[in-house]
Amino acid sequence: DQQVKQNSPSLSVQEGRISILNCDYTNSMFDYFLWYKKYPAEGPTFLISISSIKDKNEDGRFTVFLNKSAKHLSLHIVPSQPGDSAVYFCAASAVYNFNKFYFGSGTKLNVKP
Amino acid sequence: GAGVSQSPSNKVTEKGKDVELRCDPISGHTALYWYRQSLGQGLEFLIYFQGNSAPDKSGLPSDRFSAERTGGSVSTLTIQRTQQEDSAVYLCASSRTRAGAQETQYFGPGTRLLVL
Image (cartoon, each protein chain N blue to C red):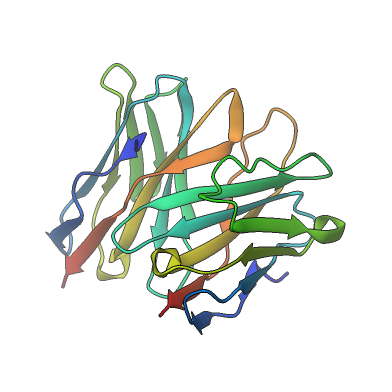
């Protein structure tokens, strides 16, 4: 039973436009959420995180939004660049076991020049 | 310093053989994780080591899987009597853990395992 879901396996966006990647979770005990970016033949790299005490965290072109009531988070990339083309994973952990992370299946983003 | 390294990068084996996958975490990182990513799936947690504490093995899919972490550093994931469904990318990650903190993980490039 997958506790973190990314229902869109792929997304294609024009350069300069906004990319919105979505993630849903089922465990109400999750309180820390992360986004990772993965290029082919490399391991995932940390992108941005958010704690459940916030509903928004921003870092440059990347913003993560958290809607706890809907158990939904999203990653916004504005403006999108061709170098952003990668697979994006969301992950979550719970306060009672904060070192155990649950990952979604990933969304492959393609930013077209 | 160097990041997380894994070896081999690729491994092809025959069904029924045993394989060993190695992970060298970032120096000083006390936490080490193993994940598996099968084709089209997300990262599946396998096992977690934290310092000298007993590992969290709750993600290991069967007793054919085992892992060790010697001296609090290098880790080896062993799969005995490999099956075709074991084919996946095996990822190792490490993090610097402080009590009460939520540290991000740094991933290695993974070992791509193919069981024929």
